[in-house]
Length: 110
Image 1 (cartoon, rainbow, N blue to C red):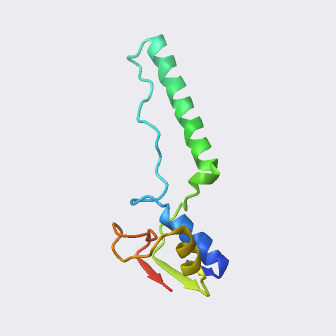
Image 2: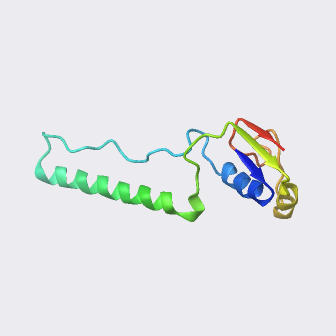
């Protein structure tokens, strides 16, 4: 991934919010109606699956939960004013993830 100028700041923000594993994971349960279930249990399982799908869709469309659906190996920032933005926000970039803000990618080049 390559970010240029303000685009590098925006993509940095998105990369720092990625989850640690694969970035988009299904949160749907493995509950499925079975032949041995009675009618009430089957209906409840169908409703549960429908609600989980609606929740997953709402999370996907939520602006504060923007996530990439792919993993980023190399991230290049060109002409990035990132230091200014992070200083104004009171953050630091540090190679140790526990000590500072760091994007979820294998390599970052600035």
